[in-house]
Image (tube, one colour):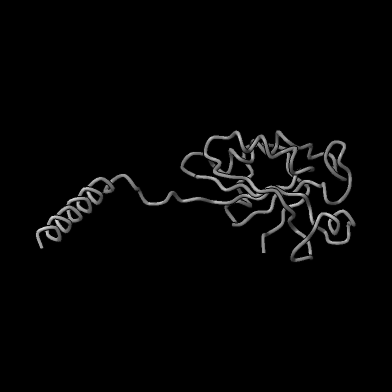
Length: 153
């Protein structure tokens, strides 16, 4: 009985200390947003975003086409309408959408209609896939624009 009582008291003390230490140390999750850009080879533009403070993660893939689960082979066939793209998850308290656009504009040549640099073809064309009207309107203070703006569906 005495051992059980000591065990219960020890357990209660450990639990109370754990709760006290965890209060205030686990703030609510940070709000995150997502931006999707196409700008030629996705691996070529990814490092610039990965280095930016406030970017949580980047994922490369394909956007804007008709195939629900595109593979490289399907996209390379130029029959799906997809573009090589990068999805950027970011903390808007640390980096703004306009700042992401500034990085994006520095990675592409918006005057090149059929791809980017040495990557030529429909899957390498530049595009901004906006997720809201604010993102559509917010293209920074730049005079250059991509040829295509598409709404994420």
